[in-house]
Image (tube, rainbow, N blue to C red; front, side, top):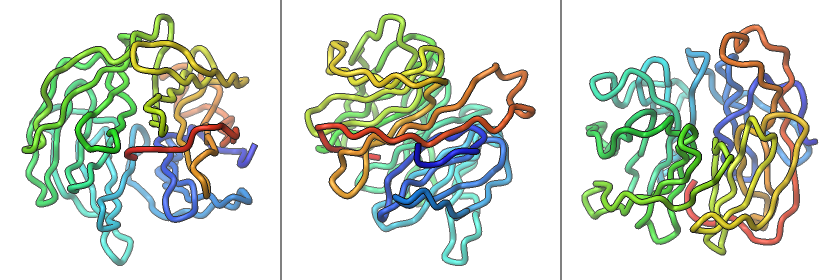
Length: 264
């Protein structure tokens, strides 16, 4: 255990030598070093959900989920609205940014937001869209559909459109939340009700499982060599108890063999 006392940690990202995460219900974005020391690096005026990723130029983007907005962090640390997405869907959840600076944001739909802030819908009818990842070649986006128990893939076209929707992996009783990719092309997904993180290959074959003692909300590969699996876990009592829940959130680490790949 690297850090204790979180509310519900989500959207972990390894960035500039630290693990960044969203501490849901507090509005905090935290950066945690390898010794477990945490620093508040941004404050988002929301509770849940919100998520983060970076443009290639180092600009931090934040999804303010309940407000349906994509925010950009300014050099002074303030957050300004880059795109209002409420005409596409009222609530958004997760984000991944490609190597060209296009931000894919999901909920029941997927929207793409260009660096200039223009936005359009590129996919619809997601069964509770959750974590997303883009393959190293920038050509495939994989999204967790939690309520459908599957990982779904799209081809990313040159104009940022998503095509060729297909099932990347049927997960059986798995309920995927946050996800990340490794250098063998496998996906790690976090699973809240089954209290585990699972590594699967395309087609759904399970390669490895890491069990935890509470719901696993998200995971990310990072560390100096990319082989540390960071797991955000917390006890889950349902949405009705979200804001009055005890601070049971933890940041856990597990060493794995295959390093990180792709985005985020």
